[in-house]
Amino acid sequence: MRGATLGAAACAVALCAAAAAAQERALPLSELRSGIDFAGPSVRALQADDVANPGMLWVERGEKLWNEPSGTAAASCASCHGEARSGMRGAATRYPAYDAGAEAVVDLEARIVDCRVRRQRAAAWPRESDELLAITAYVAHQSRGLPLAVSIDGGARAAFERGRAFYYQRHGQMNLACAHCHEQNWGKRLLAETISQGHGNAYPVYRLEWQNLGSLQRRLRACLFAVRAEMPPPGAPELTDLELFLAWRAQGLPIETPGVRR
Amino acid sequence: MPDARITIPAKVQRGAPFEVRIVIRHPMETGYRTDESGKPIARNVIRTFVCRYNGEPVFSARLSPGIAANPYLRFFVTARESGELVFEWQDDAGASVSERAALTVT
Image 1 (cartoon, rainbow over the protein chains, first blue to last red):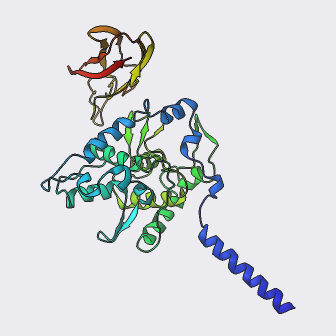
Image 2 (image 1 turned 90 degrees about the vertical axis):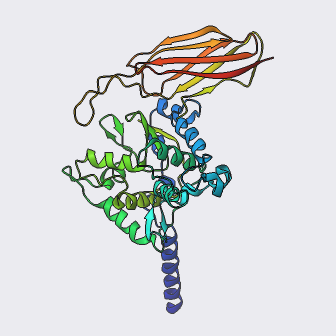
Image 3 (image 1 turned 180 degrees about the vertical axis):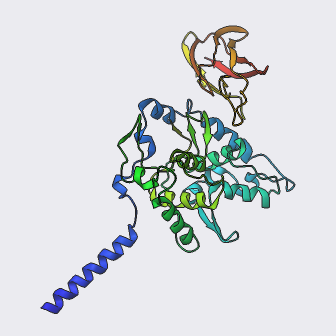
C-alpha cells in the first residue's frame, strides 16, 4: 500500500517536471500582452489601419527590393525564394536562429545581409539603413498574425543563456535590469508611460518618437541609454543574444510588423 | 522609397463623394533640431500640397513644421468623370514631386 502511494507520488513528480520543461517560460502564456495593448487609442488606431500606418511605406519599399536584381550575381531575393507571400510566411517567427555556417545566432537583419553579401554578392546594407529596415519589415510582415516560435536548443542554447543573463543583470548608473521594469512592474506607470512587458513581436516598428521605422536593436539600445548604461554597437552579439531571449520570452505572441509605438 | 501611398476606391458612382487618403514619405525636418555634433539641421518641410482632378484643383494645403514626419492627409472629392487625380507637393529642399492615381467613375 505504502509502496503504491510512493510510486504514485514519484509518477506525479515526473509528470510535473515534464510539463514544466515543456512550458518553461518567463511569463505564463495567459499573461502575455503585446506592447500595443499598453498603447493609447490613437496609436492603436494608427497600427490597425494599413492605409494610415506609416510603417507600410517601408513594407512597400521592401516589396520592390525583394523583386529587384542586385549585386554581381544579378539575382533578386525572388530569384531564389520566389513569392515572399508564400515562401517567407512564418520565416520571421523563427528568428533569431542558429546559423551552423556562421556558428552563431543571427537575427533576421543579419540573415538578410548575409544572403545579400554571399548569394547576391552585393554590398552589405548597414543597420538602420532604409533598405535594411524596408526588406526586414517586408519579410516580417509576411508572418503577421503568426506566433513567435524560436528554437533555443542545440547551437542556440549558449546565446540564449547569455541573453537571459543580460536580461536579469543590472545595468548602468540607474542600476536596473530589464526585468525590474518589464517583468516586475509591467502595467504600472513610469511618468506618462505605461510600462510594457517588453516584447519584440511588432518590430521593426514605426516609433513616433523616432519619426521613422527602427529595429528591435535600436529600441534595446535606447532602453540601455535610458538606464545610463553602455550601449553595445548595432549588430553586437550581446544585442542578438538578448533578441533571442526576448523572442523566446514572447513565444506565442503573434507578429504585428509593422507595429506603431509612441 | 516610394514617395507616397495613395488610397482611393477602385470605382466610384457619379455624383457621390469619395475618400482620398495619402501618406507622403517625408522627414518634415523642423529646422529646430541639431545633429550629434551640435550643428543645426536645415529645415525641410513640405510647403504646399495640391490635388488636381482632371486638371482642376480640388484640395490644397499649406503644411508647417508642426506637422509630423510622413504626413497623412485624408479628404473627400465628388466624383464627376473618369480620369486622373494628380498629387503635387513642394518642400524646402526644392524637391517637387508629382504622383498620380487613375479613377473610374460609373
